[in-house]
Length: 553
Image (cartoon, rainbow, N blue to C red; front, side):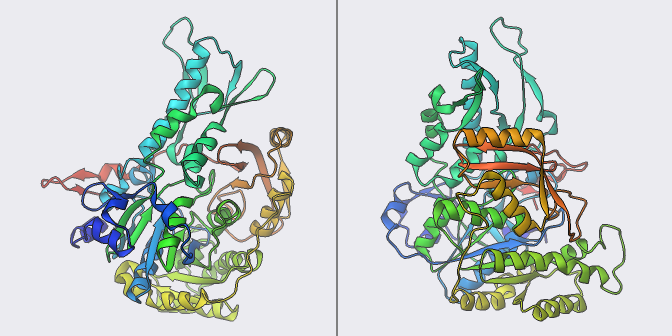
C-alpha cells in the first residue's frame, strides 16, 4: 500500500477530540474542516506560566538526496511515547509544494508513521504558505510602486525578491518592468521559493504579533545612492503585511495516524534559513505536554546547529535530548559505496561511513553538551549483519542507540527508543552554544566551520569581506550566523561526501537578514529557487475516478 492508501484506511478522530487531549476547548481553536485547526491567538498568553515539558530534538547524519526519514522517526517516537502513557505532542514544519511536486515528495512521514490529513497538509493546508507568499510579493509591489511614483527614498539597488511556492528554475533571474509604460523602470529581479523568503523565517521566530510587525518593518529591501539601507517600514508596508499574516502566525493542529496531537507550523529552508518549525508552535507544545518531539532540517551540521545557535538563542528553548537519525544507506553513501556503485561485500563502505555519523554525535555531545541517542531507521533492504555492525560500532564508542521501525510498525517500532529517551531526559545537561553573541562575524563563522564541520580555516571572497564590513558598520554583528551550504557533506562541496580533514570552508557572500535577525553566510553553490527533476513527482499526481488524490508519497 502507498502512504496515501494507508492513511485512507485509518479513521481519523475529529480535530476537536484531538484538541481536548491537550486541554484545548472548542473555543480555543479555529476549525478548518473536520481534521485541521488553528490554535487561537490568545491561547499562549493563558498558559505561558505553565511548566515546560521535556523537549526531544530529532536530527540526522548528512543525508542522501532522498533524506533519512527524520519525520517518520519523529512521528514514531511521539506515538510510542503516547503509547507509554506519556502526554506527548509532536511539532513539525509545514511541507512546501516545491518538494511535493518535485523529487522528495510529501513531508508528512510514511508507512504507519504519518501525520494526517496528508493530502491537505502537503497541498494548501490552512493557507500559511500562501499568506507568506502574498506578504512577500506585496512588499515587492510596494517597492516598485514607490520607484514608479518618484522614488523619494532614492532606491538605487533593490535586494528584495519575489517568491512562489513551486520549484521553477526559469524564475531564478528575470527582468521586470517590460510593459513599455513611460515611468516603469526595467530592472533585474528574481524569485525565491516561499520557504526561502525572509518572511518565512520571521514568522517562525516571532514571539507574537507585535514582534512580527517590528521584524517585518526591519526587513532591508534595498539601498540608496549613499549605500544606506532602506527598510520595509520606510515604505509603510509592515502593517499590511501583518494583516496578511494575522492567521498564519497561529500554529496549526493536526494528528498522527495513531491520533497523537501534532502542532505543525512554518517551514523555513534549513540552509538559507534556520530549518525549524515556529517558536510559537514549540513553546505552545511545551506548555501543553510532558514530552514534545520536534525536528530540524537536513543533518545536524545544518538543522540542529541552527536550532541550537539561532532558535534556542532567540527563544531560550533548549532540548533535553537529541535523537540523531542514521540509515544503513546513508552510512554506506558517506563511505563511498553508493557514490561509486560498489557492492559493499565486506562492509568496507559501511565502516568508512561511520566516521560521518560519529562526527555528528560528537558535535551534539561535546560541542553543544547535549545528551544524544542514535536512531537507526531500519529499511527492508537492511541486513541483520549490517544493523548489528552499526550497533556494535556505536557501542564501542559509548554511543547509545536504538533500532527504529516506525515505517512498518508505527509506535510498536519505536517503543525501545521511547523508553530510552524517557530515561535520558532525566539526565543533567550543560548546554553550550558554538559561539558567543559578542564574537565578530568572522569569529562566529570560523567557530562553526572548525568546531562543527571540522574545517581547518575559512576563505572569503572579496564580496563576502565587503558584506561583512557593511554589516559591522550597521552595528548588526551581534546577530547569529546562518551558514548556507550543501546538506550532503560537512564541507561546502556536495561531491565530497566522505569524512575529510584539512579542508577550508569557502564563503562567497554574506547577507544580512535584518528582520529575521540573523546573518546568512553563503558557502558553495546554494539555490534559493530549486528546479524540478527530469521526472517530477507532479507527473504521477492526479484525481482518480472517485475524486480522490493519488500519487502523493
